[in-house]
Length: 332
Image (cartoon, rainbow, N blue to C red):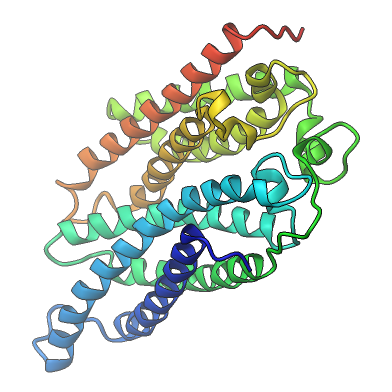
């Protein structure tokens, strides 16, 4: 195991988040079974006090969860110099079998954790906590994922040994490779470009309609926002990154995090996450817009979330268009 400050921070953070999630889940079971705001019993008063504290702590934990995704990526990128054969984070993650499952699970947890943060914020804005059972049920579903992430991340860090020979990104995302990474790299740029353009058009058109008051467009927008995230990641690997490297055979999604490429990868991933989380939250909260205590709060908030998502995806599209337009590579 390599003990660097980021590794220690990630390990301690995962342990703390897991413990908080377990404690919150225990409280969540009690709330789901016994919460009654109309009751003035001692049990209800204790639940109200504890849920405020636990909600605040879990909000901090999920905020760290999102930040830890980028810290994990940064750590993998920073450690690649210690492993023979690694040219970037792709090689570091391939040192053992836990690297890629960890980053995939961390990405999923960051998305779901971001949605939980927004649901929690909305619930706390209402005087009667109308979503309290639902947000704790959501938390009960997230807790096993957080625990699995902590275990996978711990196993990954424990298996990092400097004498291990790993693969470079060219062998992982190249045409001669096998597996999901090679499949993504081999996808037709024309097909993915068309798919990305189409899903962005659907996302922006439905998002604008929803922002202008067309409630029926909210569900379409939320689903499209999630698919935009997934298709954009595939497009970034298949045909956007080669324009950045100016090499048609180089499709690594991690080398773009390096200084020689102006750290543009971090901007891509921040904007994609910033587009997906509020977009998904719109769909999660839309069914509750008619609740009496939320009817004044939720509709304007949903419109702001949609606008935030659209702005984030617009920046992703603009950066992508810029790097393609000004690249010396031409792929017809």
